[in-house]
Every structure is written in structure tokens, then in C-alpha cells.
Length: 497
Image (tube, helix red, strand yellow):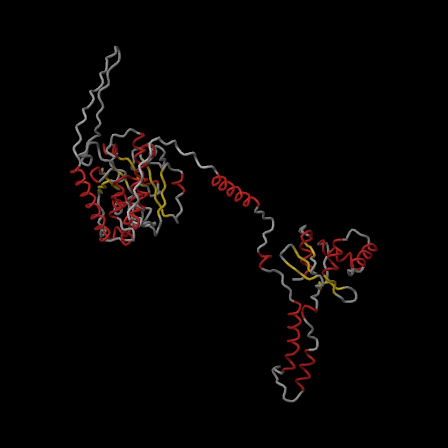
């Protein structure tokens, strides 16, 4: 790079103050480039001599002086001066107002003028190679390379590359100093005064036995995918029932493989949890019955009719029977095979917290899609004995059917035509504001896929599923039931949920 062009670039960008000279005879261009003061530029004077970088920089720094004063200052500094005839042309070039006829200095390229003569002379000698492989023909090129190597200069090093202009880390240092001061104050704080002791001397403590001293401390296994840690996390999120789900989950990828092996492991885990719960319930003493409080007496008021007692039972249908009391809730899923949740994989996800792609679930079930799936919900319950059934369908009930009183949630695919048979206001035309006031909506998608624009305007809960990781499926399933419970509780639902 020509130092004259670089100096012009720094001058036009207003960074001439970043160009400085050092005591070792170098010019530093803002920490990005370094040239020696004696480096030739590409501008020649009338005598065909190249102006050095030191001469041009001194002229630019003292351009406000008259030419005689500039000559006097240059002589005092022992710096070469630019001729009067070249001064205006050079300053106009640096200001971007004109152009110069620039030639690369021969000192940078090396002198090769004698090479053709040597080649010609060597060619005339007997025994000279015709392809120029004679040592005498190679000598000019070697001389030019040696001259170029002597003219090489280091523009950057590892220290200049680490320099970050206009960056100040004083704020970071202040935060660190403040944190260190807080830690020192805590360590230097006086210890609390000991509590007053009674006048009676404390009994002497017996020295621990040798067996107790040699007994190692118990070490609890830990890890992201550790089975016991997973049980503790599930117990904190959803109670003992959620912890029982971990008995049927293979944290090392059994469910990721799918197939009958995963289903057998889940069934074995549920049976084991149910047996343990039944044994614990048989051993526990029976609690005395709690007498029911009599209903409050209502005094008749003149002119006011007493309302008829409301029945807690929903309209009966062939699917609404629940031996525990209350009607069974209904969850509607999409009917398409491309949906994230449909009739093929709804049970494994909503019951066991394990997501299986719909295509794989369809192959496992040989394409036989059930018309009704009964999900035994244990998430958020005390144990398997308190499981609550849910009905999952992909076909909405007929309009006017009493089963609409039991529809509590819908898992949407992100298309409006999925709600064309819903009886709510505006559902047939795609206006779903009233639909999601009466039904809790959910939308699931992979984390590397974009959410449909229409879904962003709906009142639905959006969940992201990892495409290749299944350890978050249980958390998403439990959060869906918590959201649904809050939805039904706010509406004083009498369903069994």
C-alpha cells in the first residue's frame, strides 16, 4: 500500500490527529499501519526523486505557513522540503481536489533493468540454456527479491490487532471493584454475639466412635439426565403423580427410539407406581368420617322468587359418564396427519409427557386411526388413584349437541377452517375471538419453524418443541394442564378435571 494514498485517506476522514511519529523513526497510522519515516511515496519531484513520507507529513502539518517560513522550519527540523512548484499539486491531491501522476518507487520493486542484457549475453554464450535456466539469468530476479525483502515492513503485530479503538472498559472494572468491595465487607463483618446460655453446664458430648469417624459421607448422584434428579424435578412441578411418570421414562433414549419397547416400559412403570400406591393406602389408618355441615337456611323475602336449585350435572351423552362424579372434559385435536398433535400421538403426549411424531405413531398403529382416545391424566394429581379421564377427538360434536358443554380445549394446526363447525360467534367466517373465550387454545410447533402469522393474533398458548430432544416434553405437557386448570377454574367449571 502506498503511504501517500493512506495519508490522503486519513486526512479526508478527519483522522490526521491519529497519525503520529515515534522515537524509533516510524509513522503510526492509528494503530492500523506502521511505516518508516524514510519510506518513499509514489510522488516524484522535477529531479525524478521520490518524496519520503516524512517530507509529505511535515508539509501537511505545516500547510498554514508561508512557503519561506515552511522552508525555514524544515531546515531547522532537518526535514526535506517540498518544492514550491509541487506544493499546491500535492496539497490539492491530499484534499481530494486533484489527481497526481503516481509511480511506484523503484526501491520497492528492485532494479531489474539489467536483466534483459544479461539474458541476451548469456544466450550468446556457448552452452547457455534456451529456457533461461542459466544461473546468470536467474541472478537479476534474485537481486530483486532480496531488495524487496529488505524493504518489507511490519504493518501489524499481535499487540496492534488487540487494540480496540473507542472502547473503554472502565465500567467493567468499576463493577468488578464494587463486587470485590462488597465481598470484603461481608468477610470483615463482625460475628454475631453468642446467645446467652443457661447457668446449668451443658452435658459433655461423647466423642464419636472410630466407626463413625471412618464412615464416608453419602454421595448423591447428580446430572442433567439422572433418574433420581428427574424424579425430584417432576415432583416439584406436578406432585407425586408427576414423579411416578419418571418410572416409565427412559432418560437415556428408550422413548426416543419409539416402538413397542417404549410402550412396555411406560406400562411397567405405571403398574409399579399403582401397586406402590395401593400398598401405602392399605397400610394407612382409615380417617374418621367428617360430618357434613347442614345447608344454610334461606329466609323467604316477600316479592322475591326463590331460584330453583341448579344441577351440577351436564347434559348426558354416551361419552359423558364419569364414575367419580362430573362430566368428562373433551379436547379437540386436528384431523390432519401433518399436525403436530393428532389422534395417533395425543395419548402418549397428554398422558405420559412423551412426544412422538405423528408419522411414526401412524406407522406404529398401522394407519388405524381411533375415533376416540381416552387419556388418563395424572399430571398435577396426588397419585394414579386420583387420575382423571379426558376424551380426545378430532371431529367436533354436532351443532346443538350437549357435548359442547364438555369441550374445554382445542389444539390448533394454525388454520381457520379447522373451526368452521364450531358453534361460537364468528367461527364460520374465521373470527375466533369468541371461540377462544369459551375454549382454551394451544398451538405447538418445532423451535426451528416459524409461527403462522394468523396464530400470533389468536388468544392461544404457544409451545416450542425441540426437534431432536425429548427431555422438555413432560414440562410442556404439565404446563398445558396447569393452563387448562386455570382456564376452567376462572369459569367455575363443574367438569371433572
